[in-house]
Image 1 (tube, one colour):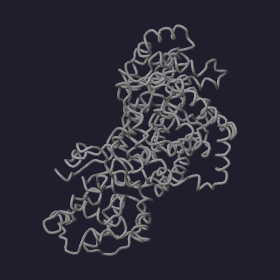
Image 2: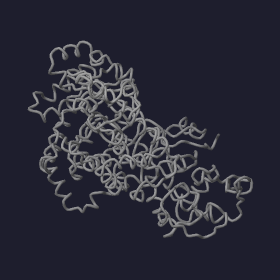
Image 3: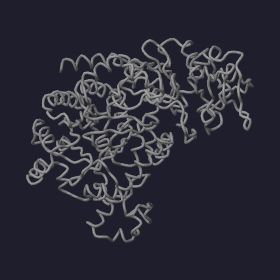
Image 4: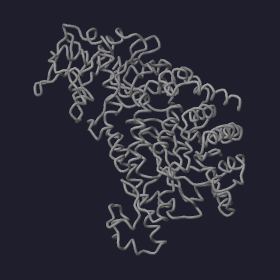
Length: 620
């Protein structure tokens, strides 16, 4: 392994920074067409993950393990059985948490806890019937020598019946390139060892990505760890990053990991529990978080808010309406006995984290996550700097996964708004597909141009007047590619307009509907006839999703059933979520038309969930 690593890093040194940040299309093309056969060999998966909705790089999804289902983004409050500030039962009953995390090493080292866990199982020990994640204790190595071998802790996690276990990695302090490199190599060796130790298939496992904030080491770690059959990948965030509020390094570490780990694998940020940074980390693609911050901050007399953490001495009011804060005023809190105050603050802090996670999920659902991130970034200069860095470094990734159209308008929230992926991608399409430097006014009702409130000068329209035929042809070129409009929409079409608003509604050739212009975003929704015409215009595999399977599956899609990811044989890798797509069989015969849920490079890799939401099948 040492020789392979040295060779790889030497090759990396010869590449420019731009080459290191490879184009996503090239990255996934190398792996895509083997994905289906690889997964088909594995049989059933221990952890089943699917995307239900999305925004930015975030995935509002769900995963199922051992019959238990939880939603992502997922926050895991960490429970230390030696210091029970808030019990797991209270976390479930009062806060609604369906999953928590505890430390298998701490339980293993306590004879009483160990014996009870082995006898009653981890769920019995904790009195918690939700999903239980257990850490292996690697973090404890920062506090001294870890008196444990991986074989012991892996077997122990299996024997106590955890739902999701973690390998015993070799964490990095992030002190230097060499120290991080050593962590990458040793953790990969541990990953290989873990693959020989795992015995119980029903338990899901997390592999750990190391590399500090060095992109080449993160890429190397992802390559090495992806060789092993982990269900989730976690990122080892060096403590010095979050202790110094170095949000930029934390974000870049997560972004590089997300771009180099297969998309169907959830990504877990170890130890991230400050509400201020959670929205940004979700936006770059983290799915799972864990932290004992609610209790740690409480012991230090710190009170969480959505704009930062305050010491209670700084507060004149309790700016929160959670049940805990409504029960007393700040004066009572300040004179409270320490033990009672710690419990008060811990309960408030956990409510604050829960509130932020719910705000993030709602923002994803409304397609306004970037705006929430921009709002939070105003609370700390380092957070704003990290957001700008994320926009720049993650451009190729975000333009592939951020939905092409959204439910919410794009609002100006600061100078960094011009870096928003949906805006940059739209302007890039205007230049590449329409050959224009200025936006044709024909697109004035098309997302994001018609659904934006921006500073003057950001959107420069050409000011020209277009007739209805010219307008819908320009929209078609913008949506499907250069010169598509004139072929898709001939001269003799009838353009139906709303009697109330005068806006274009439907496009007909004689009595045959070609498509409709969606009033919410100004994009074209194709009819089956429109899909057939587009298929003849575009060379395969453009805007196509190819379905594989038996006659029964093909018939289901023809009848209007959605296309599930596991049955996608191949597709146009440049499809963006929420784009209009053509569903075909492997002979390129039309089956249906619909809207992409997944990006092209993700289709076929997810083993659960919908890849295309079918609007109309050919036999409906």
